[in-house]
Length: 361
Image 1 (cartoon, rainbow, N blue to C red):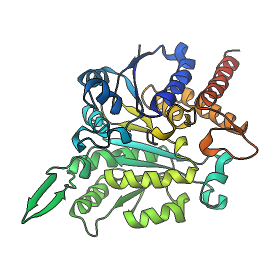
Image 2 (image 1 turned 60 degrees about the horizontal axis):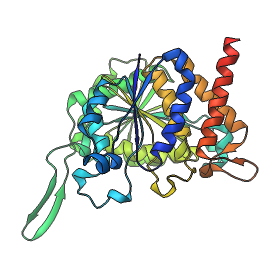
Image 3 (image 1 turned 30 degrees about the horizontal axis):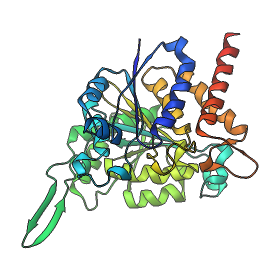
Image 4 (image 1 turned 90 degrees about the horizontal axis):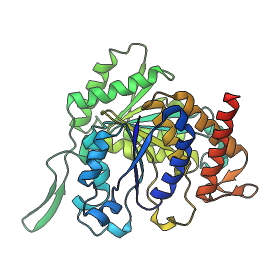
């Protein structure tokens, strides 16, 4: 019986997680899973004095998959960097060995009017950002602060090993084989030694994938091309920091951050979460969009439990609900029906249930 670790986290995290659990419950007969709930982030700081308590760590190591709502908020901004909620997220990635983050970008045809780009620019746009997740400046050592000659300075280390680059490149190339067989690797090899190694190892790894077309872009050019010609991308391979920035830029094309899921893979388990933040300013008001969280459940069913058929049921339900004109506040406009977080989750649940019942009949 699969164990799914539920980490509601902070802000709107618990609200959208309620809807994720509602959707998951539709598939109890197919998977017969159990939920285990633990704190992380600011909620864990408040109750356990740590953003990643030992009990959460132990539960993560025993889980078959992990669902995360969101972490962080202004309430904890005054804490030292090493004690803030975001450290819980970094810690669970490291604990589980989650070195590959997948962020698919889908343009829902019902919502093209919410994108800052013209509809014709969004035609045929569908790509995945494969972001390396456990290296780069976020984890590199040495790091810290120092004072010399009366001047304070701070420093971080951008570092990658050959194996770190090779394994994330393989993830990108393997994924491309299931898509349109194109990988664009992002770096800054014209000025950074770590990125020169990145390009070299990516090219070496590419020799094992002669059926895949490989191209390279400097990160500054890539940030422009995401807006200028987003349909040119299929699989985008990025280092950690560049991927963090580019994936948020790409998310804007969809019209709302609340629509996009992600998966962090590579270890004995995997973690799934929407790409948006904890949005504490709207927490508890029923305004949060649960679709990104619900689509993260779809990614979990596909990648961790190898049930793409169940993932497709969720995606179809989301599309049907959008066709019906239901919208949460982040992408509502005149002529559509504004619904709350729970109403959106309930509508998607209803469509999935109808689909399942229809299949059984």
